[in-house]
Figure (cartoon, rainbow, N blue to C red):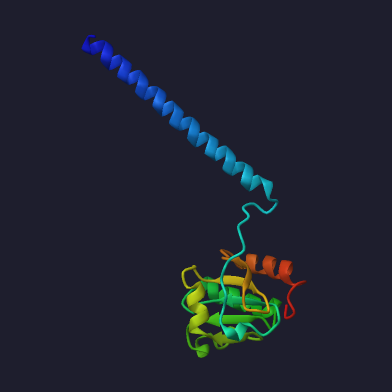
Length: 161
């Protein structure tokens, strides 16, 4: 076989392999699109497997906002939560005085162990926590309006909203 014919065969085999790879990627995209479109709210995930400290296992369902005072969105979310859900809880790793004046009407909890359970997530972290201290639902808000939406959605299940 001449080198030119071998080269052309090799090129066509490479084209066929690339076409098969493209078909596999397109199939995966189609499957992912089907999963996302199946849920009315978009992507649905499994319940988070996070348990906060014993201070949150008091038998009542509550809204907890984990914040850091150095985060502008956290500050805005804390102020908004204080207005729309007084009695909710703010979790922080800092001294409670760092949130003085921001968390009006909110219960500020300084708990490093609970913070460690969620510290891998970007703050603010808005959670619905059951009476055993387990996180039932979790949202990482990117806008303050998402705090309003989630508090409205969770208010029927939460005693302090």
